[in-house]
Length: 67
Image (cartoon, rainbow, N blue to C red; front, side):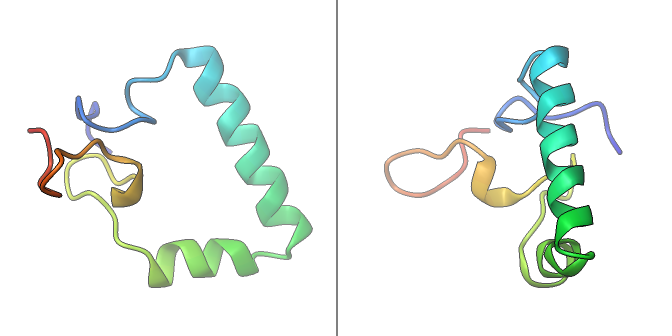
């Protein structure tokens, strides 16, 4: 994965925030026996630069990305 991008909410979060987010997401994947992982990876769009969900990236009022 790349170092991150400046419009991504996950990439700009503090290390402690990322730690808690990763723990929560990991717990969700374990509880749903991996179904949530398959849905996230298979049906959602991801940023080509950082690999995170595109829905978590900041956008302008017209819908284009801030970058």
